[in-house]
Image (spheres, rainbow, N blue to C red):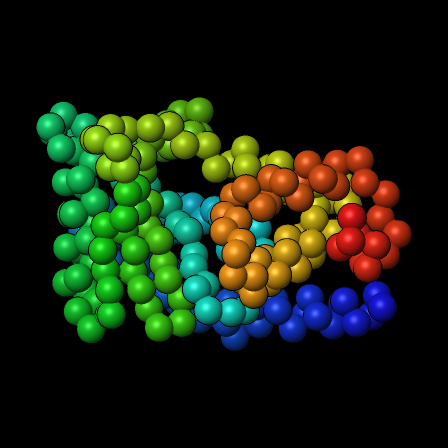
Length: 217
């Protein structure tokens, strides 16, 4: 059965072509924002990937998305932090800047903390953020009022990478399998964040024997 599971995991994983398509989308979005917020040529240093795409646990199905932080300059952060509705105003500025570039894209909208750019093949979720000296980010939050919160995606990525290394890749594979099950299960509403952390905790002291037993457990 192990070979069948390996083939299944391969079939639900993103292909090289899909990853290239995703990169074209999120780099294009970041380049558009770079022109508006910086006076120098685009470089990868102004973005930070996180979430499923960064951890390579995105599966090949509908609803694929890429989470990317766009690092805003300090003067931009200071400007919006001083405004009464700064978080909403910043998200609106991001949205309007992208609308000037992607006028034919189906949807570009504000969504709590991010601006969602809904391409036909991938959704790019842009999270504007100011990077502090401690490498944590300050991000806008419009979900419950207007405020700024601290976000530490690097700790989440490190936790995943440590688990995946310890389990020799099993953490990533199991997340993909359960994501596929979750997608096909109408009465399940597990979020990726909860699912990832649950599996990391589950595998912490688990002795892997074979995939059928693992899935059953």
